[in-house]
Image (cartoon, rainbow, N blue to C red; front, side, top):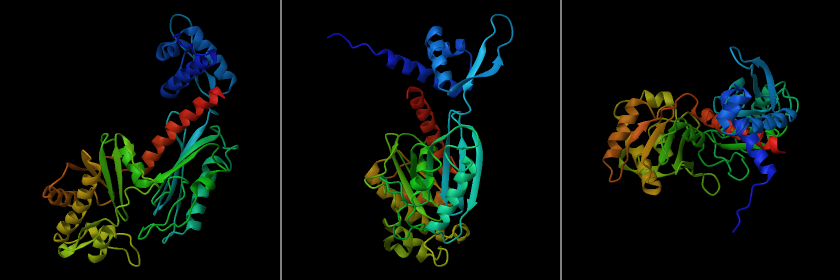
Length: 370
């Protein structure tokens, strides 16, 4: 059978992609440097540069090489190639970043959220940060080109199919019915990806291909990473551990979230855990908490068979809590190593930012062939 030769259009598209990705990684390159990095001939690079310059995705930076020999021209991505938004919706407020295809954060905006949160209040904060970072609309972004993609982290369950936030029983951050995809549509020209904060934090952790990430803060969450992918479940609610049955005070079986009610460690008139009270709790309370968390981990190990458990969140990685969990977990029939999260500085936003960067780069490559 005679192999099918790739079309000229496909070869041009692949050459353009190699050139674009090299510029995304390096920032600026000469044609000779591009040929060496991309592994394609100088004439092919020249043709690709001609096409990409005509499309407005690549520009002559105005910089020239110095020293002996022929002077080279440096090329880079055009400032109008496009940008992305990474957004974090949390009980403390909404934080958003605008970044370019090199991963540089160009601008940052934040708005507080009143407690208890309302869908209207969170929607207003989300729109406010989007408007501030884009200049009002995706077609008029105030420099940096169109906002091609966005990644949104939300401290609430997220419907996998629609990206809408979903109200589940005893979720502490009760935003209610909120549709970030629709709210951001006037400001983003391409796809908006929404997921819950624990899944994004797990993606930022880089703890291997098979691990469980458990978030312990005002809310309780879990992400299962299998073969390097976060398992979201049919509707997107995988990892909602609040109602898993575990061991509470006095050895009683109860839902995980009820343990903290029994210990009087919740915020008044809320299902949210009062983190300062938990961290200041008497030493005798820690073994109870450790046992309760260990019961949840046992269920995760039985179902997901991870190589590792990572504890994150404001009190999950607190050394005394971590030690109490390890001690209780080690006494169970099946256990795996448990360590504190390595990423503690806005891990959910970091995960969303990484996704936004990859999606932006893919969108720019697609724009080159359209």
